[in-house]
Length: 225
Image (cartoon, rainbow, N blue to C red; front, side):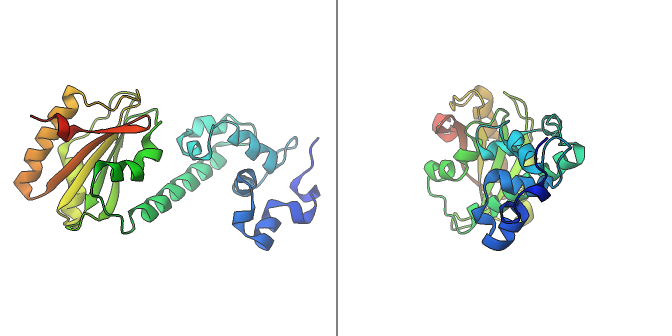
């Protein structure tokens, strides 16, 4: 039987370490153990945290685990799975706030630098919109939809609604290709053309439509006639 958290020397316990030395001094597993809080009769929360992290290749992949996948770890029930998912979403939103702070977009590479790491290896197709002001500064990063491994269902109204709400004049559409090939499909090109027409009708400018693949990207505008 393993040691309980209370049986671990006081200064080595995650709670006490964070209080004394700060959160940045804790390992990933120690931080997660604080969220998990309690263990089982066979494992303490730190050991359970390590097994959760063993499910992913890198820490950021934790946000992609479903409640069912998290709950499959002994000692992680539905409540703790939901707590972990909530933590991941808060982290994602904080990262998005930091990303969009005074970021100016002048080319496709800027979009890739902003979102490439997040979208490169997604197993599902994701659609996002960058809402920009007149200076091409990012005002909002809007998640539109997350679909299947080769399709995401969305409408033009989904794309332009945030610009209308925020009364900002420019946008960039971004989505990924889980296959890794960022070249646009016929549907991608058609959607972009229709979106340009819709934006022109209401005084919004589509600056670009970027498709992200494995460590590369393509601009759909380059494929329009």
